[in-house]
Amino acid sequence: MNKYLLLYVSCFWLFSCGDTDIKQGETLFLRHKGCDMPAYVYGNTASNTFMILLHGGPGGNGLEYRGGVYAENLEKEIAVVYWDQRGQGNSKGNNHAEELTMDLLLDDLDQLVFLLKHQYGEDINLFLYGHSWGGTYGTKYLMSKKRQQQFNGWIESNGAHDIPKLNKLAIEFFQFYAREYIGAGINVTKWQEIQKFVNSIDTLNITDEEALKLNQFGHEAEELFDEIKQPDEDEFQMPLRNPIDVVSSVVTGNYTSQKLDENGIEEIALSDSLYKIELPTFIQTGRYDFVVPPALGFYAYNRISSKEKTYKQYSYSGHSPMVNEGVEYAEDILTFIRKNKK
Amino acid sequence: MILVFVSAITLSAQEYRLAFLSHSIIHPGVSVARSFTLSEKIKVKEKKKGEKEIGKSNLFLPQINYHNVLKTENSFSIGAEIIRQRHRMKPANWTFETGFGVHYVRSFNAGKTFTIENGEVRRVRFAGNNFIAPSLSYSIGRTFYKNESMPWFFYLKPQVFAVLPYNGSFVPSVNFQIGTKKVLNFKKHE
Image 1 (cartoon, chains in turn yellow, red):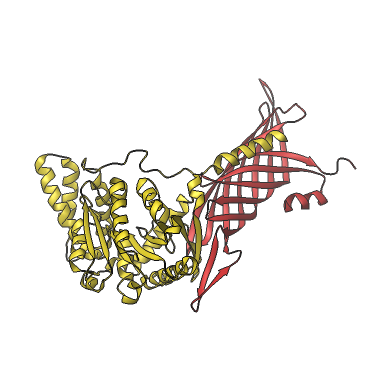
Image 2 (image 1 turned 135 degrees about the vertical axis):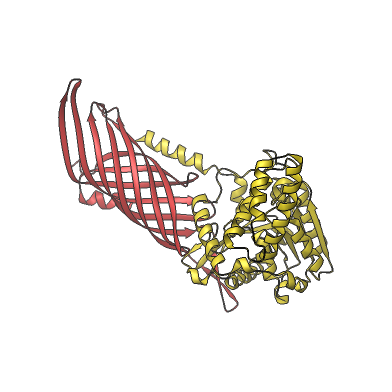
């Protein structure tokens, strides 16, 4: 019997050897309206400075942003709250489809802010960060002055705060690069395919299917640019054993994304309301981001009312500058945080 | 443990299965099961190379599974499978099983859970979620050292669950078991 026991213990030990760093953080679960949403808090909690990370998608998860040098550098100085939004990542419950509205998501974030202040103190410095869909979510949240008052600053990275405008800008962006690259004889077949597709779209009536296809081409286009800096192996790595349950995260994320689409998130257009943002704001874009073209970020920079605002475009990045130019990206966030914390 | 205890006080020689389980490849766990034979047929065929013995059985397999998702959940399930087993006893000792089952899953959040009501934060103890999970499985096993005093049966078993209701829908969940089975006789000293 001993040999069986030894075999089992060896296997369990092998799989239990996760990244020790992963084990050091704290997980707080927020239970709200039929859903338990984990908030993984990693980093320097003693700094009293917290950054809530709103992940992309919808359909992503918080911890997929916790890999590599940029996360390491952020966590040395501040605490990062990798939160799985309702119906995404490791959040789970029996919430019903009809409840999946933007208002419910905003309510969830209210609750998370309340919980963090309860756990770590009313006087903590709190920053809100949103990437891609997280940019839509965060911008929508900050349309309320009362909600802005809870934060020291807002960081929008490659944020999609106006989806109809984003689609139009993406079409123009594709058309520009397609002309350039077909003319130069580079990746001609792929650029012709993209050009044919974007030229066929009626920009006054972009369908959901066309928007989805634009998004897919946006990711594919990044592979056509040698200028985009790829991370070294030691720069961006997730440990083997980590809390992400890939299968359930992908399946439930897709379902939630579909339901949110049905409930109107593709129609969120906040460009005309951006003047309501008075909070110190840092807007980050990637030069070769075809998913959320940099022009959308620059437009937001010009429209918000914040006295303290910064815009930065990362010259060697696509949709995820935290992967492409991690060191600089993290340092820029930290500079913004240092400047705006109490 | 409940399974072992209940079996110990009810029957004598019993077959138990103990497996290391990997949930979604990277999350470790354990599975304990006890098999009951519902029906069994053994056919012996004379071949040129010698005698060939094939067994076909239907089994009932109650089981308890546990897995941990790091910093996220401790998940327990209790359920049972109906197994169709094909057993090549001679000359080799291979066992092939196809099963379907139903399980009750209880996951516990691996962290403090809070709810906020009327501006007041309240901690929820033993928070988690309940699910029902139908399953399908297939396993391949082989007996080693069959003629020795301590034969060793070793099996590989992928098991696929549909966990529901999960965020208004369902999610697939995959376990992979590497296990062994052993006959224990609790009343051998009587």
